[in-house]
Structures are given as structure tokens and as C-alpha cells.
Amino acid sequence: MTVNKFIRKLFNLKDLFVNDFQFKARDKELILWVRPYKNGCRCPQCKRRGRIIRTMDTPRKWRDIPACRWSVFFYYSPREIMCPTHGRVQEEIPWAETYSRITYRFEYIMLVYCQLMTQKAAARILHIPKATLSDMLHRVIARLRDGHRIRGLKTIGIDEISYSKGHKYATIVYDIDRSCVVWAGPGKGRDSIDDFFNNNLSKYQKNNIKWATCDMSRAYIGAIEDHCPNATLVLDRFHIAKALNDAVDEVRKEQWRIADPDERKALKGLRWLLFKHSSNRSKKDSRTLNALSKGNRRIHRAWVLKDEFEQFWEYKAQWAAERFLKHWMTAALKSRLEPMRDFVKTLKKHQHRILPFISTRLTNAIAEGLNRIIRIIKNRASGFRSLPAFIDMIFLTVGDVDLPAQIPNKYRTL
Image (cartoon, rainbow, N blue to C red):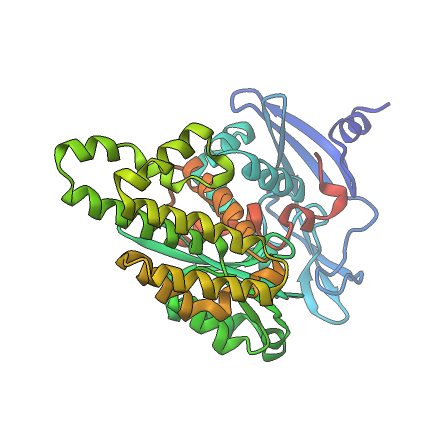
């Protein structure tokens, strides 16, 4: 076996032939002088062979994946050809994208590493500066997503996420069926979500959306109902439960403010007990809360109403759930607890957006789970200086396109 053939086998090189190699011990670099193997002189656009006009005087350099602590580079002098269709062009480079300085194999391994670890750690493994890797990474992501269109969107979730200090937010749109992010943009107001519907979806796509879920944000509710006439909006169960917990906690706070020191001792530690779901409470917790019927009847009344409302989510028939909700709201209004009355006003306002949960069981849980992954991305990087860089990492990790899979299969080295 010749040395050149050994190098091709060792590095699993395809579609290229190794003419020569050189070690630079000082820089820890292995230079491979290569040329296309059996598919050279092709037009990069139509893939037709063309007549060779000239060979470049200065060789170009491409960075390949490192091996045994050595940085590997390909050197080759491209040729200009005359394509019958596109005229005078530089021949296609089979191992790299046109005008790129890194090979497809390096792009693939860089994308995979950055999905799994920080850019700093990936840069260290790939033997390049972090700033260089960051620049390469975002150029590759932009190229792979260039021209991508959202397809098959039927169930969407909308939420916002904080990405920087100073109340800076980004709006995220999720495909609930596929558990992925389809769009991210700056801000959390109506303008942000309108930008998504106006510039990323056609009228046919908006009419094809059947289900949508979000929190009680007026901006998101208004945008969904205006742009998606055929969509059934289901408000997220978590945010309804949170609003009820806030109302119960407000009753507790009111009683705490007017309580004397002795009464406060009895009320101390109730906050988290009141928040607990009935399935997570111990017998001791229940006895403590039931004792409030004599110690503080107003807090006890609020807690009983909260526990009763949990039954709503268990109904299977929408008509039965609607009847239960009507009776519960009547009881809450008669409770003479102002925070609970305010919660009833919220329920009445959004009743037609809450009841569809009974038949669909649709929640924003998938979106919240993806939000957790997005926060991990942000924390892992210790924050991002710019929103576009953050959005690129979101698309790389939980986007609707598997970016590493866009690299040609024969160059995927892992």
C-alpha cells in the first residue's frame, strides 16, 4: 500500500486524490496536497463538465477535521472552466461549499459539537480560536437555512423568552406536532408576532392552522385570532392555574397584613401548602389546611375553591365542564373574596378559549419544555451579545431543520 493510499484510507477521504503531504511540526499542521478524483472540472451550478481554461497560480486552503492534535489542511489550485451554460466559472470543489474555507466534514463536526457543548469547548477540540469558530458557525447556519420555508404547520404554540438584562425578550413560535421551533424574532409585542404571520406564512398556510395555544397575552391572542381564522385557540392550562394560585396567594397576603403577631404565627408557612396540587399533599398538609376553617375562614374558603377547580381539568365532555365552570364561578362570586372575583372575571373573558382544552387536551407544555432547552443554551454560553447569534443557536439545537443532516451524507464523520 502506498503512502498516499494509506492517508486516504486513514482519513476516509472520498472524491479526492492525495498528491503529496507535508508536516509543519512547529505549527502542528498536516498539509495534504489534493485534487478531485474522477469528478473534477464540473460547473458548480449545473454540474456539467467544461473545458479547462487555466489553473489558478495560488493554491487555496481548506481546514479539515483535526487528527491526533494535528490541524489538517487541504491545498489545491482550482481550475477555471468554460461551461456551455454558465460561461467561465471556477470548477466545483467536491469537498467544500463554493468560496468556503472549511470542508464539509469540518462543518458537520462543528455543528454536532456546538449542539452538545459550549462554543469555547468545541473550539478547543477543533484547534481554532473561539471567535473564529463562532463566525464560521453562524455563516454555515445562515447558508443551510437560506431559502428555507415553513411547511406543514397545523398546531402552533407562541411564547416569549428573556435573552438579556433590561427586559429584552424574543418571541418564539413552535410547531407543537413536531416539537420544534419554526421562528424566533425580537420583542414580545403585537408587531413581533405580526411580523411572523405576514412575512413567513402564506394565506393558505394561515388558513391551514387548526390549533393554537399561548398564554393570556393580549398581543398573542389578538394576532392568532386575526391571522388564523380557522384555528381554535386554547389558552395554556399552566397559566390559568397560575392565575388562580396568584388569587389565592393574594387572599393570604391580605389576611397576613391585618393579622396580629399571634395570628401570623398560625399563618406562617402556608404559602407553599396552598400552592400544592391535591395529589402532591400529605395527610399532615391537609390537616394543617383544614384547620384554617377555624383559624382563618377566608384563606380556607379560597383554598377550598382552588381545590374544587382542579376537577375542571379532569372532565371529558365539554358540556359537563361548562356546567361545572358555571357553578364554580357562582360559588367564587359568593365567596366575598375580591381576588377570587377578579379571577372569575378572567375566566368569563376567556371561557371560550379555555373550554376547548377538554376536547383537545392541548397545552403549551411542549413549548415550555423547548423553552427550558433554550434557557440551557443561553446559560451554557453565559449569555449572547446579539439576538441573531442566539436565534442561530436555537435553530441549530431545536429548530425545524436538522442542520447537520443537510451536509452530504458521505461527509458526516460521526
